Every structure is written in structure tokens, then in C-alpha cells.
Amino acid sequence: TIGSYDERNTALASIQPIASSDGDNAIVLTPKMIPSGDLISETRNQRYGVEVNFSDGAFVFSSGMTGDGSSISIRNVASYVTDATNTADGTTFEIGTAYAASEIGERLFGITVESGTPESENTVSVAEAISAVANRPAVRGQASMPAIVQGNQMGIDPSKPFEVTADNRSLTVIVDNISSQIELAVGQYSVGDFTKEVQGKINLMADKLGNQVSGVRVEFDTESSSLIFTGSTATDDSFLQVAGSADFGLEDVEPAFGTNSSYIQLSPDTQGTTPLYVFQDRNGEWLETTDKGTFDENDIPNWSPIFLDRGELTFDTSGTLVSPSGASVLKSATIIGNDINVDYQGSTQFNSPFAVLNQSQNGAPEGDLVGVNIGEDGLVVASYSNGSQKSLGKIILANFATPKGLRQVGNSGFTATSQSGDAKLGEPGAAGFGTIRAGATERSNVDLTAELVSLITAQRNFQANAKAIETSSTLTQTIIQMRG
Image (cartoon, rainbow, N blue to C red; front, side):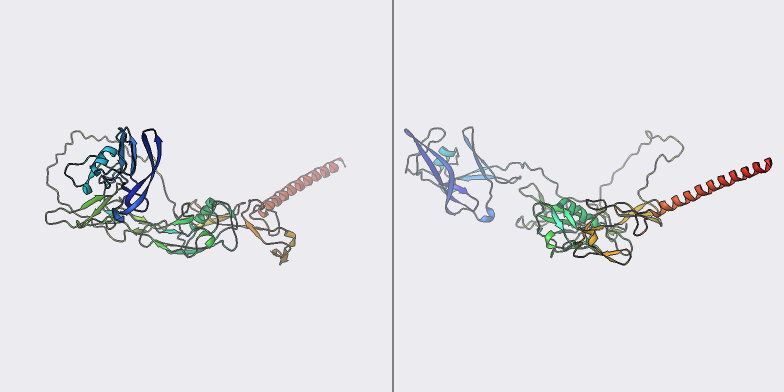
């Protein structure tokens, strides 16, 4: 029996042997250990992941944790051998014989203890080893975070193509102060196409003043089988809320707020120094605290690196500065005075004409709407006087299984009937759908502008031919008169 642990507790354990006989020697294999005693250590002090290996004639015990504070100790807690065992050096324990714990540890595992140590305290400890985990510098701050909303588990199987129908196509989205109801196109989607479509729809949202949402990301988390929405701004005023069908895990989803960046202002003591206690956890992360009391890894704040000069600026979609909301005060520091010698002898400056070699522009001046164009794919694009273009929306088409079954209402309106079947919506140019001809007369497939140009061309050709006939007739009449 030795001190061991399993996934449930740390307790005394009995070796469960599988024995075979080899003449005078008995060979014992130990495939597992069965807990057979009380807990040695409380649950909060237990450490899992300990490994035991036999290499080059010696046992190697590896700690289950890493870090500069990692250590391991082996204690003999038994002194009675219940089976004959051959050790690596040929030493044999007699069946039913009592041995000192130190003797078992030394003869079986090669563990030696100091003389005079009580059997209950026979412990071999390994000195602290340097952590194999790359240490990260400890800093005092918290980075600004955008609003992040994670949906519930999707009600459909995202690993297969799924249908967006008229019942689950609607989403209600609020980004900061901009809210809108999004209507997705009905059809079949993969999870990648679905997140791309939702993200595109959200980033086209705008308020009455024309302030448009941009930078919102929509991703699919394979681990939780849910959608994750990440806002575009990172301030306390950042807000994100999404509501939709349970098919996409968007029913009863909690909204989220963003956070501003912050840092800790430590108060110096009378000697001009600041007491700071730094600890390192098993993963190599540095943890800071200003309290030197009882150490509890669950109560110590875990900080992540940010710019400690508070230089982060956050803007909204209209370019207005959002964070910081007020002025930043620079803290002065007292340094020891010193003299600086500046030598200008090595500095030179050559006179040359000034000229701009290259310039770049990352924006555009204010422009007025000069035209709207509709492409064959149904995309409505607005053109402005400053040369920029902006997509305003997209026209969708409806197809029916039996178009002749539609009922006409008015000169150019039709409605679905039981004979035509339900409408199937899709984008222009997609399978089963035609394209859009912009500028054509209603109930016609003729381009009005092109036909008007053809009409003017035909009229001019007619006038030219008529003039030629008139000239020929005049010449003929003149010749007849001359001969007469």
C-alpha cells in the first residue's frame, strides 16, 4: 500500500496485482491502484496530473503543475508487504513480513530519508524547479472591451445546410443607439454563408441621421454550437442586443455592454515607494495584489497588458471621439537632476527646394447625390458628386412553380393563388431567377433609353435619305428643262 490519488480523491491506495510465477521468482504487474483509505489531503489542496515513469533503472515522479513554485514530495505511508516482489536490483520482500516505511521506499523506489525521522513524516521533497512556461510581465491595467453577445445553442444542425424560411428570417438588432429589424433572404444556407449574411445586414443598419453601423463581427463557435456577435466600439456606452428565432439560438439572449480601459493608481508611501505583491500561478501568469495578507489565488486580480499611458482613443461610426470622455491628467515624477551636454558639431543641414513628392487621401469631401443605378444583380448603388458610391440595398425576385396560375390585379400586379404555389424568393441571377433590366418600361423587356436613341438615329437616317431624293429630283427636272 502506498500514498496515491485518483480522479476522485487523494487517499491511501492498494496495489491490485496480476501475478505470474517464474520458478523461484514471483513477477508482479500492477496495472491499477484501488483507493482503500481516508483522504490524505483536502480537495482544495489536491493536485492532479502527477506522472510516474520508470527510466534507466529509477522511478521518475513528475509534478502535475508548472511554475516557479511547483514541487513534489513522496511519503511512505505503509509498512506491510502482502506479496513477494522482485525489485530492479533483485531484492525480494518476504510475504507477510513487516518492514519499515523507509526500508520499503529505499529498496523499492530508491527513496532515502534522513535518519531519526518518524515513519509518519518520511518524506522526500524535490526542490522548486524553474517554470517551463514563458513568464508574462505583470502590468496594472484592464483593456477596453467591446460588447459581446453569445447566443444559445442553435436549434438546427449547423454542420449541414439549413433553410431560412418566412417564419425564422426576422432578426431584431440594437447596436449602440441604432436599432433595426433585419429580414434575411429565404433560402438554403451553410453556417458560413449565414454568418456572412447576418454580419452584412447588421453593418448596413443606419439611423435617421445617416449614422451607419460598421465593424460588427458575427462568428460561429463550434464548441458551443452558437453564434457570437462582437460590437465595433469599446466603451461603457457600447451596447449590443440580438433577438431572433430559437432555430439560430437567438431566443431570450442577454444583451451586453462594453467597457472602457482603466488602470490602477497606486498610492506611494512616505518613502516614495509603492508596495506591490506579485505571485505567479501554475500557468506562468503573474498575479498582483496590494494586500500582503493570506494568499488566496481566487481573490487576486488577474491583469492583462494594455497601454499604461492611457493613450487609447475610441471613435463611433460618425468619427466622434467617444473615449476618453474627459481630459487625461499626466502624473509628474521626481527624477534626480543631471547635466546634459549637446554637441552640434556633427549635425549638418543642406538647403534644398521644398516640393511635395507624394500625397495620399483616406477620405472624401462632402458630396451630393447625382444618380442611382440598378445593376442586373439587383444591387441599388447611389453615386455622389465627390466620386464615391454607396450600396443602398438589393432588389429580390419571386418565382413560382406555375407562373400561369397567378391572378392579375391591376395592369401590372399579380398575386399568388393555390394554382401558382407559394412564392420562392431569391437574388437576381441565382438558379431559377432571371436578371433585372434597369430603365425598361413597365410590362416590357425593352430598354427605353436605348430604344429612344435608336428612334432618333432612324429619324436622322430618314431625313438624310429624303434630302438625297429631293436633290436627285431637282437635278432631273433641271436636265429635262434644258433639253426642252
